[in-house]
Amino acid sequence: MTTRAASAPSDELLLAAFRDASRRVLRAFSSSFFLVTRFLPPEKRASVEIIYAAVRYPDEIVDTFPLSPREKIDALANWESHYVRALAIEGSRERLRIGTPWILAGFAEVVRRAGIPEQHYLDFLAAMRRDAEPARFATLDDLIDRYVYGSAIVVGYFLAHVYGTAPGASMQDAYRCAADLGIALQLTNFARDISEDSGRGRVYVPQDVPVFNGAAYLARAAEQRYVRASRDLPVFAEDCRPAMRACIEVYRSLNGQILREPQAARQSVPAREKFGALPPSKYWRVPLAYLGAL
Image (spheres, rainbow, N blue to C red):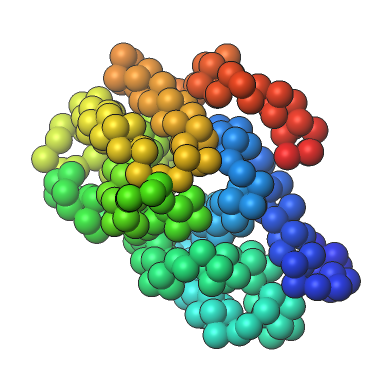
């Protein structure tokens, strides 16, 4: 990535290099999201890929880096300082010149072009710091307000600015739908990963819910929000709805598995079900995606 970036003759070609590298990150870490994002328009898909890389790296700091909690918090603070500095610089090549990590150099450009409020990413990083020093949450509302807002809702806000709104809909309409979907996706992940998170010292089941009933409780709360997000999807630009609808169907299928077998080991959606959630008229995109053409 560094060699290619250094040789890029323009900021636009440099952004294309960021996009290609981000796409590889997305494909390596989330097969489901990678697949559904293939049905976005190319320009919007490229921005989503860069956003994914920007949220994935801090998540990896807290999940996989062999660091103490204090070292993780320091690493996140350093990452945040790079982000803030990158926002003050015009042009991706200039951002790289001052030492900005390539992910943030690309993400800062997406933030600028899409009009994403700068504070949203700071709120995301604050949630990642909470993961470095896990806390308990008294109720579902407490979990959403103190953690899910930063870890998932604001990510939905990033995407809302990239996707755009339908005629007659406002960005606040899009934010409401994005919040419901972000909460639903996060609660489904919490329900699926209870054992894995416990091994990291994290408990996302609210304290007013019996732990043995945690997966079912979280999945039921997610289901309510999938229903609302599906209903409100028309507030988004039409060219993004097929990908968003596929995302809802894939993760809602996983959520349904958890509701049926809440005590089962970590679950996943079979490939045939993922494929079935995709727009039939666009099946031709699937092999191209895995061949690297999309």
